[in-house]
Image 1 (cartoon, rainbow, N blue to C red):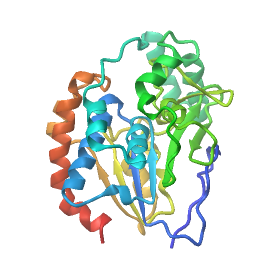
Image 2 (cartoon, one colour):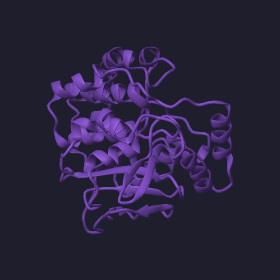
Image 3 (cartoon, rainbow, N blue to C red):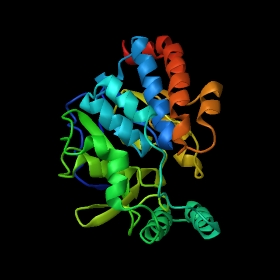
Length: 299
């Protein structure tokens, strides 16, 4: 049996470490990827379920950015049809901030900063002054269906980054934080969307630390990761590297879009016009992967 503690560079924000005496067989990791990433992850999971692999049995679901949306809906047991309509028929994102040359330069500097937390703080502080939609508008768009929804009892971890300090945090049902705010914070791409206030602090996208934050799955025997964009500037943060770092004793699988899904997603992860086509290609991909993943998940 393996056990889990919070990785050293995370701040415990209501995170509850595993009971060493309690086995944790399965973890589902849902990475960031924008609106099309939400559609791809949802379609892939629907396809798996149709193929006999029901990831709702996961002992832990870890959501970063887009993955926090999918993970929250999954854990709450939302009606499939309702969730599908929200994913594929959402209105175009309006009022987004825009990146200019200075923003791109700042991002590049942040990614190569010797101290990763310093780089994240550079992006976070800039986000505090960016011209975007209001926080209320952002909450309504990205987490409106979660308004007043309680945290699920089943283990759900949502990642974010403190905009001022660059410290990474993990929210769960012990944090005393509204679910909708945790999700909105995790999705706040700096410069495009407004940082979200939680208990007097402002938070941005958990993907600023890592697109998937797979290290939070340490302590599980099997780990399934869905990564719409399985890349990272820092090699150690790439999903494949993070999965391998869990150790040879962990059975693992990394799913990412195949060629039809990549074509459907296009280059703009915030293009709502592509969500339905993305969902449909991911559904096919998930169905095809189900027999192989049944060996990992079901036995």
